[in-house]
Length: 246
Ligand SMILES: *Cc1c(COP(=O)(O)O)cnc(C)c1O
Image 1 (cartoon, rainbow, N blue to C red):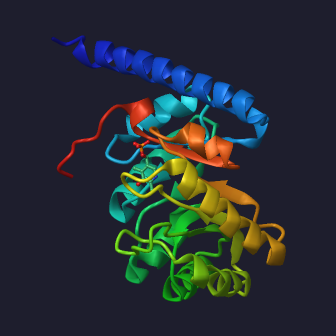
Image 2 (cartoon, helix red, strand yellow; image 1 turned 135 degrees about the vertical axis):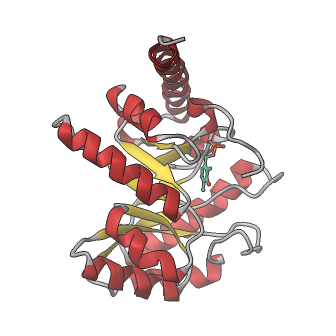
Image 3 (cartoon, rainbow, N blue to C red; image 1 turned 120 degrees about the horizontal axis):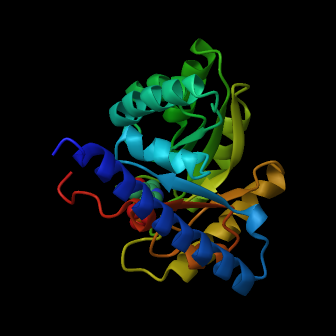
């Protein structure tokens, strides 16, 4: 079956094109229902567990923002992706790190990510700032907020957000841009994202440039749009299901 790889790549391209069109359609409809302008919403395509070839296909289809949640996988994959894009003369790409991050990996992430959406403690702030300085880069930062009082899956509690925001703002290599959250499992995403928006408003009072809200994934992007999401993080609806045991 010597033709299999090409046929496979064409099938994958078609699948990604159709899924992407369906997601953009959902975003358009969700924006219309929420009275919002789709131009104010950025789709971050979450490519974790999927290969560099999928990222390149999605880039070719016009996507520019990608999300990853594991340091080693993201670093290797996007080195390959950026090299291929730069060879093709199409280097425009923004990589969002969206996963729980240990501070000993922060310097590595600071060297290749453009946005870190999952900042949830002061130790991580200093580690990212140090890494950004060492790599001579700037990083855009979102504070991941825990909306159910449980920080075991990452996130800062709402009453600790203000102090953390000030810590990010005090770092000259870090640009505080806003907040991110995952709706708690089994909870009503509208209630969760309503709370997130209150937290976001509180931060923006002190830091006017922090006007991003990253909320909404494959299952609840419409709820995100209803509550002011500027960034949607969508994986499964575009790339298909991930292997469940990884
Ligand atoms: C994996 C992941 C997503 C994407 O979730 P889907 O349900 O596949 O769209 C979004 N946000 C975070 C933080 C993730 O880890």
